Image (cartoon, rainbow, N blue to C red; front, top):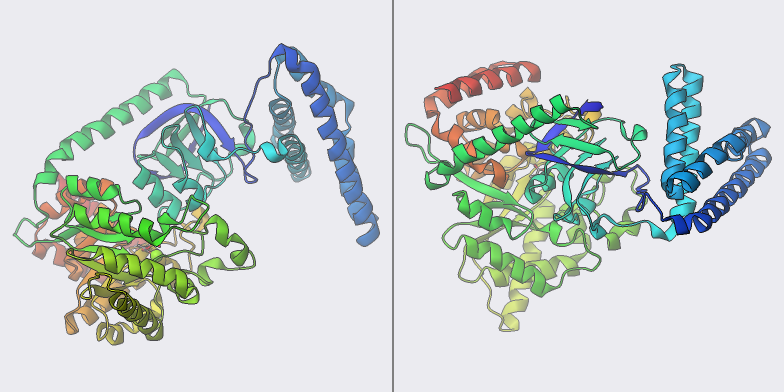
Length: 579
Ligand code: PEP
Ligand code: MG
């Protein structure tokens, strides 16, 4: 039994057979063959091995010529391994006697040796283990070739264990067959984590390296509420996970009544509680949970997990579906936030060269660089806004000039539609995400021009504290409780008040129950949260008074360490919910 603890990002317990996707995205589609196939599969293995040997020999020759014999020797060691008769005979025995597919047999054998090397516990042997994994990858690459399967083509239920899943891959997961997933990397506010919750797939991220010891097919349990992952669980662990599953179910049941109740503090102050969505169908879930409209529709997911660019009509239908779920409330449609980790297939080449994509051509910058694509989206939004209440929000705005250029694009599109006699709504609100420190610093100036602010704490924290939101190694630095972040939120709230501009928070900070009293105490009266936490957040809102929230914010603001604020907020939440 192997157990690991990671970051719980999408609640629920999943159990099933593992499907392993390593850092090179190899998966072994078939683990067993029939008796009849043995001869042919042995032949396939030998051929792959021959190609691997030729490839390594070529690398050896090049290294000898270009950088010297010392480096060439690295490859001669690899070649010796690839041609080791004991190793070859072990793989062939598994294929012949146990009907393992060559992929499964190679992976099993090589990982067994790698594990043995690693367990010897010194640096020299650990490096040999790395060489063995490298050989495994080479063999798999030759065996699988074009047969590498996509996660979208699954035919049986699995729990996916991967080094990483990109937002595109996650968006394309087949919910019928992917029972849950766990990844070695990823952070609490990564897009992959947000998507898992949107898809309702239990998930744990940021587990650290653990895939090397797993070849696929084992039974795995993942608990997306506690962050625990267990491979080949014993009976005691099964009982523990089942208990967690029951607890999760009963807490869902307990919170069901919240959908009928309004989000107001116990002294009667109404808090607007909206939903963040990635897919149009989620609007209905927000409605069922009693949300006050949509505060963030991440429209870039129309582009991810598919090959072609969506048409204006597809945009239009998606926006209409969302807005009609809330005919009397505001729906805020964020224009596409592509780039960084959200790269659709057709955009890959353009972004290949970016050495620092989070600081690269993303979000509004990308839209302004691709005006045709941007205007197609704007046309659809303005058309869909007829007779309903829609706001347009621009992501990652970092200067007034960007906002003005985006606003100009909206005006041009309105004129085009008017000229073409196509009905559109000319009274849509135009707002921005506040997620770049420069925008916070310039909040007063922005407040003179925008209709609303929505604070995107996920990126704001990442850019303010220089901590990648997807990297578990720096997860402890990516904290909403950091005094610098609290001060920034305060600045935006003040600018909003001075100019009568509403300020909402749509980053994951507002989906974290312990941060909600703090936000309310700072003066926030509008938040937008992940649909699955709406009932829980409503319960927190209904359990506090404004005076209490102000006290909490006052104390939090007096602290100078994120760690102290975090433990204080946790304690306060416990007290609030215990009453
Ligand atoms: C944010 O950055 O906080 C945000 C809400 O936007 P996204 O998570 O889509 O980057
Ligand atoms: Mg963002």
